[in-house]
Image (cartoon, rainbow, N blue to C red; front, side, top):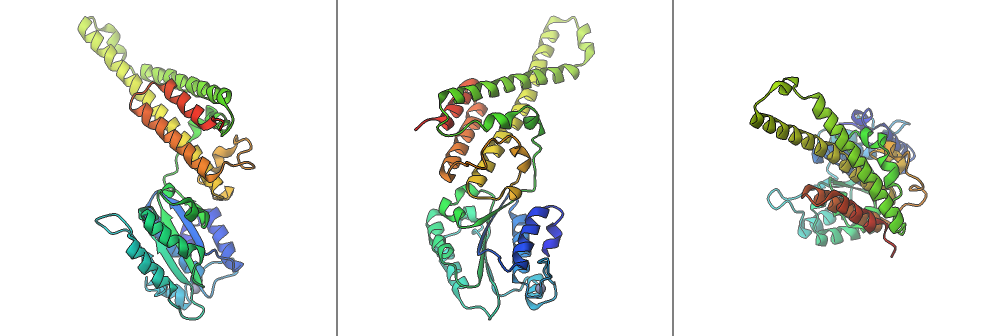
Length: 340
Ligand SMILES: [Zn+2]
């Protein structure tokens, strides 16, 4: 499958890759982050073919006719090595990793690009990651390494930082509710060393936002209420209907709140990608950066950005297990803004 198949969906990424190819400046290591492992694999093969093509057009498009192109199309390019987790353990063992390292270190035909693809790289254990790190530090000549992952945070920061990151999310979420309610502008204030006052202020504003969602849920449930209920005179039945109505409000509120928490996680995940050097145009949700303050000029360190995601995940976990919302919010905001 050629890269053109993906142009419509990921125009910026495909253009950046083609430009790199056309300028003969393809990278040695890429990290492809997404939410669909099979899709990442298809994309990686398309990019590998483009990179290996010896007859590419001026705009970096694979020709489809040269020998490498044809071999890729037949899935028979001999210098393409793929490693993936074992089906049972879901692990990529250190032994398998060493074999992979060995394979890509062997000489290729002159002028032929060697390609090493690590499918589901999050399945590399720490030991295997460390073994692979050496390869990343000194990749064999004429080699391109592609790491594919649906969970980039499971990879060592040293691995991530040695790769060019690309985000290929398929199930793009719509964060218009969060955007409309100004959530991202609030989150932009949450940063290290900002202090207690900023932290509590942000918690207060998010808490207000949650309150608004509750009103919204009530209105929605009210609009859906069957007007015939008003005519019911049986007290027990009336009580039961009122309880059901309350449960509906609560369910709708939780749905709205979860969508906001998803947006929070997306914000911090994106911040993490920025901290790891991902170019803005390649981010999964550049549209939510409109109120990012000076995030782009002064990103957190990768380590801090990662810790902050943990705080948000912990918050999400607390709220789901019925810890009092405001308490959980305060804890999250204070942890992120703590002066240390
Ligand atoms: Zn070609």
